[in-house]
Length: 280
Ligand code: AMP
Image 1 (cartoon, protein in one colour):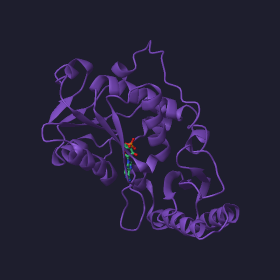
Image 2 (spheres, protein in one colour):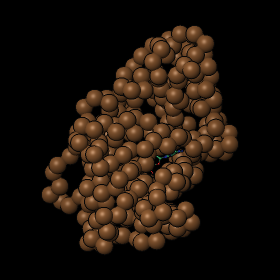
Image 3 (tube, helix red, strand yellow):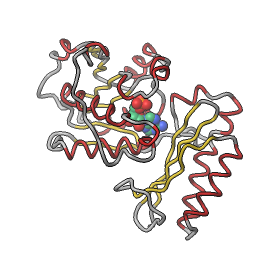
Image 4 (spheres, protein in one colour):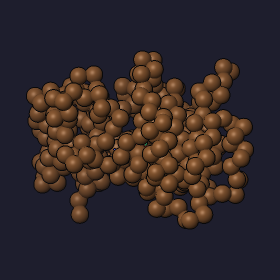
């Protein structure tokens, strides 16, 4: 497995190579590995699977969140090797964003609600880092988790709006869950044992909401009872929203394919999850 640590070493990558790219911030868990597995499945035998591990400073709203982001590099490299990754890119923030860095991608539509409303600039930081990665690695496909559905939708939109789609396909991968339904996340390790026991209620509630809405219950009452239920279980709910999956705009009806998305904290650990709701 090749490990690339700076832009100069990137020149050793073959230009004509078909590359399947999985961007991550490290602290790899089974969710990340499911993306790598999907990339490996989609790749032809001669194609390359490339993983980046980079904690992107410009997508964080709070400095301490960035500074305390877990770093498990040795274990991550082993996991990549074991998963058959061909190349890992580990850029340095100082080279990636030199002092005179002054151009950013701005998204103005899909990033307004859900996580965007409490994390100003977050998705602009995500788009900017990804556009740089796409330019540097020239992948033919890039893989993103549906757990971060809003991120996936914004990346797809950027690829369309900035005409990157002729050479690049964005592939969404279903959320990988623990046996009790909790979506895998590096943040789960920060939950106390009591909080860990409560955490699966997030997905359980989303599943109940899906069943209620598909059997004709209205969103307003479902929303208030579900939010109360989460709060009684100990969550602080940041948002619980129903949006159209195609536009991410709020809706009250499940006539068109929808997404019910939630962000809620247990103590200082913020968890996000979502469920797709569609008839048929
Ligand atoms: P991160 O390292 O948190 O930036 O995540 C890197 C990629 O892994 C993103 O595309 C996430 O959506 C994806 N991811 C994180 N957790 C999961 C999960 N439980 N299932 C599927 N994909 C995930």
